[in-house]
Image (cartoon, rainbow, N blue to C red; front, side):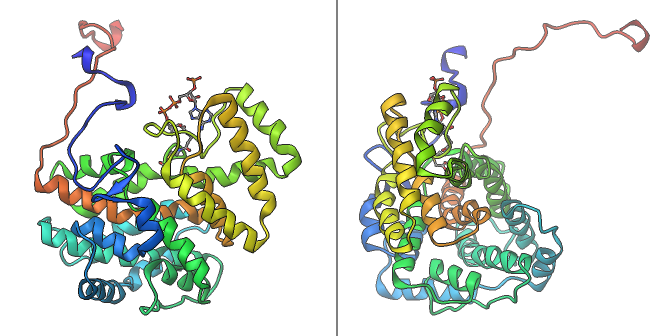
Length: 371
Ligand code: CMC
């Protein structure tokens, strides 16, 4: 048993999947993410991840119509969002809301393939409503009803701000959602698959996955990466800051990856787009700070940035509150998690690994007075 032990399951193959692979760059159902981000919309990609093929025009129209119709949440949930203390992180609120949505889901107990696809579509439509509603309630603003003529990422920006986003913003938001949509057997996806491998339900799998994504070593890194730039504060401080942190052997959030040792293709793609948005929105100082940090981390440690590094800046340039960055990752990733849940249940075997015991040898029990 000891021969197969690998801390953090590094290098361990824990299952099969037809959804995505990181073997030759990153592909979803066979399509390179760069091509998808360049030419597709998030809704097309969500359909691809969930159904296995890019949609034909009629299929896309039907999908968009169903997402639009489901872009509402029960008033009881809005009331709960109103009552949760304002200081609660949006990720925690989203985890609670996802769990609560199960109580209003008519097919909650049906874990058939078809029902899970229908539930995924509804969750995909409802989670952006939750995030936008919570943010507006927290800041004492009226709720903005979804505009079903808009695509999902644009609709999120509309519900959050009550203003239509520009075409450029929509394109950049779409690309970030496409790049966040799916990523093989990462910690949160594996959590989702483990959860439903007991024959638990889709909402439980997604709720568990949200909990796993929250940590700063995973999805929480996008909020932490902006924290890095905020802490650095200025271009002049960047070099000294990064050298000091590396000398102390501390980690810099937004860098490194278990699989991509030469570079995360999502970060490479998003960097160009982020730089263009920075130029438009007057955030050149942040780009310069990021570049200095990136160059020194690469030169000293040969560690490249991951997707969260440019994405944190992109969302900052959009003026989005930092506390929404990881929730947005959830909104984009829910389709990937769901596709994995469905795939797991289509060919299920309960996840039950073993461990190496490091505790005391067998010993004799003693009555309380003799211990
Ligand atoms: N900054 C500085 N050093 C690092 C970093 C970093 N971000 N990441 C890894 N290292 C060093 C680490 O200190 C170790 O050095 P040494 O061998 O001298 O002890 C070496 O690189 C290997 O690191 P590791 O933590 O054993 O690598 P891992 O494969 O177990 O972890 C990781 C991968 C992503 C958890 C890690 O790189 C990390 O903690 N990065 C920061 C958090 C982050 O950005 N996470 C987002 C991941 S990608 C997208 C997502 O999931 O959201």
